[in-house]
Length: 95
Image (tube, rainbow, N blue to C red; front, side):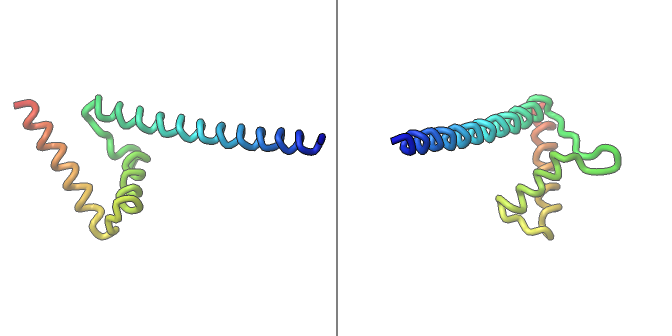
């Protein structure tokens, strides 16, 4: 009878750890969304600093490659196209 209780306790502990991990992942995702929202609110994206691309731009390129299946050879063209689209939108908004 005591073994059944310890198994239940272990199961509860395991479930608690799973929930804590899930919460941690959600909090991380919220931080990413907040960072993206800040970029959108500022209207300006910093792409280059201290002689290298920012981590955000690197992450964007990795996401384009891994999640959107953009080939490495076409990645610069896609990024430039997105930047041109953003510039055109900014110019139209100020007119």
